[in-house]
Length: 142
Image 1 (cartoon, one colour):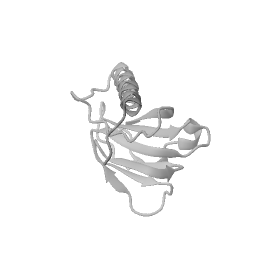
Image 2 (tube, rainbow, N blue to C red; image 1 turned 120 degrees about the vertical axis):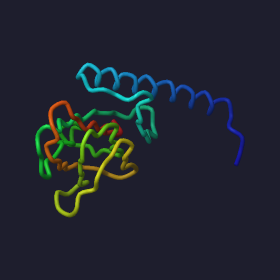
Image 3 (spheres, helix red, strand yellow; image 1 turned 120 degrees about the horizontal axis):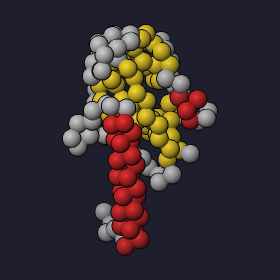
Image 4 (spheres, rainbow, N blue to C red; image 1 turned 180 degrees about the horizontal axis):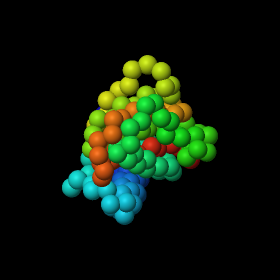
C-alpha cells in the first residue's frame, strides 16, 4: 500500500466535509417532517464521487403496501440509482430491487444496496400505526 499524497488527502477531507454537510441537511429535513432521527444517525453511504445526487424517501407505515413502486425514475429523471440505504425503519418493511416479482428482502436501519444499477424499488409493509416511518436515501450520479 502506498502513502497517500497531500492532494489526495485534501480531496478526501473536502469530500468528507461535503458529505457531512449533506447528511446534516438530510437530518434537518427529516426533523422538519417530525421524524425522529437517532443520535449519531446510522446512515451508511457509499458515495464514490462528489457530485452524486440524493433523494430521501419517507414511507408512512400507517398504510399497508404490497409491492408499491417508489418512483425512482421520476426522482432521478430516468437515471438509475447506484445506492439505496435504509436509515430508519419503525416496523417491518420488505423491498424488491428492479422487479416486483420474487421474494422481498427485509430491511432495517443500515441496510444498503450499492454498486448496483437500481432502476426501481418496490416496497411492501403491513400497517403498524400512526407516527411510524421507514426512511430511505437513494443516490445516483448526476
